[in-house]
Amino acid sequence: MDTTKNNNRVLLEIKNLQKFFPIRKGFFKKIVGQVRAVDDVSFYINEGETLGLVGESGCGKTTTARCILRALKPTGGQIFFRTQAGQVVDVATLPNDEMRPLRREMQMIFQDPFASLNPRMNLLDIVGEPLLVNGVKSRQERTERVAELLHLVGLRPEYMQRFPHAFSGGQRQRIVIARALALHPRLVVADEPVSALDVSVQAQVLNLLLGLQQELYLTYLFVAHDLSVVKHITDRVVVMYVGKLVETAPTEELFYQPKHPYTAALMSAVPVADPRVRSKQIPLSGEVPSPANPPSGCYFHPRCPHVVEECHTKTPILEEISPDHYVSCHRAQELELAGIGQADSNRRN
Image (cartoon, rainbow, N blue to C red):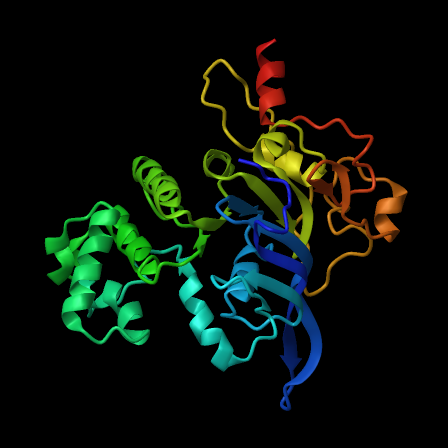
């Protein structure tokens, strides 16, 4: 798949996205600071591709995803979405009455299949609820559509009278996927959709997502922290650290030749499926900085093994160092960092 930016194929483009949460103290709840959960993040997604959004817990991945869907209202920035009709709208500033019809084209798969399903509703009501809310009043029509969706995700239509407690974790996640597809969306935001599942079930759900993408021409924003999963399913990857974007590149290039020290450290933590290969994880000193009180200069400099004086005072800008490979690091051009492909080769030699 062509992963380079083509304005005729771009479905979603994020420009300088920000989401700050106020810190309040005292009897009068005076604002004394801000949590910079997402700070100046920019990327795009081509129609029909899968973009991975990765980073440690608390780096702002889920907040970014929720801002895109307007589950959270952004503090600043722009979120351009190309609708089915071909019109480009800014989701960040769209009024609520204009946002509602757009939600049919953007849906979410939640992380926890146990918490995201109402235990008091059967499958017909759970999967059919988006249809009911969006004007499909005929119960017969909803029943037929739910049966079609259940078959699409590998479940038997006669299950629609059962309740969520009767299903395993993998089956519940299939139900969540069916609900997300009920309104024929073009963009699906998957927030760590397999992290709560057993490894064997993860593979089945990932293959299901890939098959549905081919069949329905879906576009995925895949939020995850498991890089082995990201490598399997994505076309391009965006790496975040403390609310900022530090690197983005096509998946194969990013995994083979990362250019940011943080990305290289993440790669080193991925286990290699070969007992003859010794793992060489890159240790990171210190703790992840608080987004309420980030360090000066590069946010990663307190933990970076390649830090120089410039990193303490000057904030790096996101620069393109090769086609569609952007890095926010002062030393990106000079560092030779080992990726997963390189590391595997070096360890075997």
